[in-house]
Length: 424
Image (cartoon, rainbow, N blue to C red):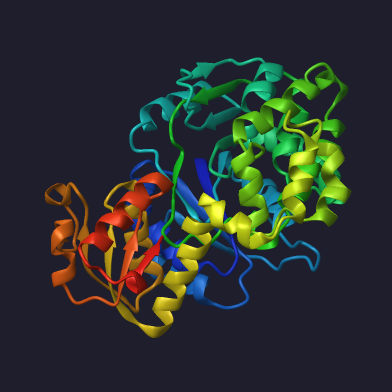
């Protein structure tokens, strides 16, 4: 990789995500170059599209970008072995490795000074993640407290930076968890090595990343293995950590679920709506849910046998993310003119997704109750002007179901045809 050992590399394992990688590099390479951070693409794509993207930027003079070709192992369905191998290889050339997903974009402009100071001070694990409870940044955290308070958020790629000496000690643990077929075979080894010697741990309270507009549905929704993933976290992951963690394992199991919020009643409906929650999965993994939630198992069993159409009708996740994205895909295949209602954070992300992932959709205008404050490349219009514009579809980019229903009712009163409306 680098002839001279640099301070930090941003490691991006990737597979057939050339559009996402292109967006990532276009938006962040200048910043990475200014900070003297290298970017290492660890690519196992079955075509040359990602390599072509990398070569495009390297030819433009971005020598901070490195490209590594890798052939996936036959049974490495989630790229976990590839990621483990990449971490070890990068630790040979860099003091620090920041592991990042190819569908998330690092957001470090506002906290780079804090980060650079921690790197200078020699911290071994730097966790970057926004804590909605308002927790302040911390330094020199005890490894058990770190495990209890931050394990759940460490499961996000982009959320941690590791020193080379931590990664080298993780290598044997990663092999162990890979042999046990654990999809969190990267995160558990981090905690496994912390008791072995004095590693300095720090936490930065900040949003580490933002979703890429090229992002697809979450892998758990795509692969229908949400319950399997959580069962592994209990049956394989936590229980196989060193005995030093024995007194806090049960606490962490409950707090993991509490913080991720996947086991309230609404989430049970969401799991059923996208096909994750089925009777077969409950019979196989339901016993592990007892260790992770206070919600009665009867609730999950009930939803596992309920018709999916009922769950979809009551699921915010399914209506917004699954049906909405499916509709965009359908429109893109046909081509069509779209007016998007909603210019909040979610609406902006949908516009970015359309721009980079759905080129056959023409955005005619963007509307919102605060339409005059929209500063976008698209024409902004008040809601009452929507019927005057020629469009084939009108997408309502509102996550909150109550507000979505109010907006839909308003548009129907403006005589917008119901067949044009969809939730995205």
